[in-house]
Amino acid sequence: MQQVNVKFKDVKQVEQFVKIIEKFETHFDLGSGQRVVNAKSILGVFALDLSKPLSLRYSSKDTVIIDKIQPFIYRGGEEEFEMESAG
Image (cartoon, rainbow, N blue to C red; front, side, top):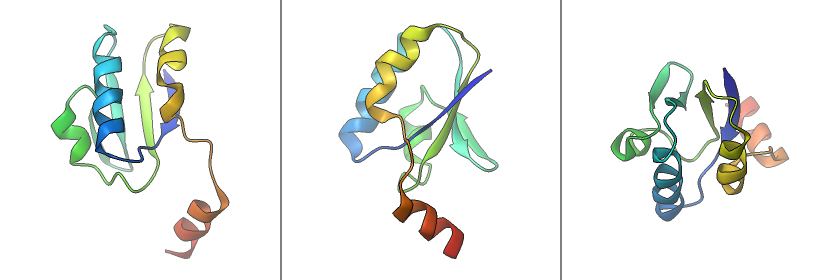
């Protein structure tokens, strides 16, 4: 199982992300905590809290996936971690 964190800036990025992963035959789970959806479902993705980084899990070792979703990969930022620890 592979796992990366992703974050979206706007609706257009969510649409681009879903279009990219739809092309892969593997299953993708996206979520945070106990709320997890099929990442290929645009309605499911929009049901999540997009203001925070989300965990993307999939069971493929295809390195092309990481290359394709590179613009959405979240590498962390001090501001976001401060807000999470304060809440």
